[in-house]
Length: 92
Ligand SMILES: [Cu+2]
Image (cartoon, rainbow, N blue to C red; front, side, top):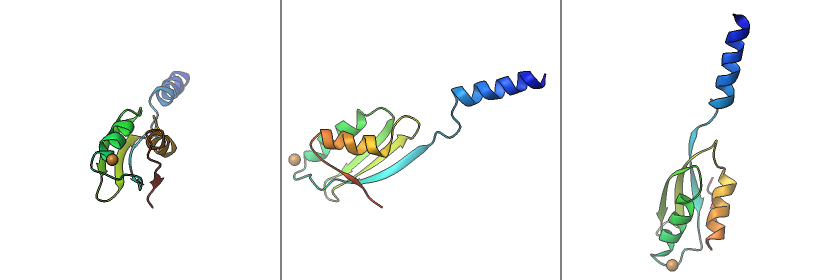
């Protein structure tokens, strides 16, 4: 019986990572020069696997991204904006 419980716990731990969490990060995107730039940046972020929401502000030159940290990383997000032509860095 103990063995069965241990097996169930192990199965659960492997299939449902308990450490997965929704995180929000603010990226500084200084390369945006006009009002249509945020559309490109937002699209690039939204197409990244694990991204749940991306709000890009041209006025602030920043992107607020909500993502699942089990599916993507902050590095992948900055890479996505860079590949779209807008290098970004994480705002502290
Ligand atoms: Cu532009």
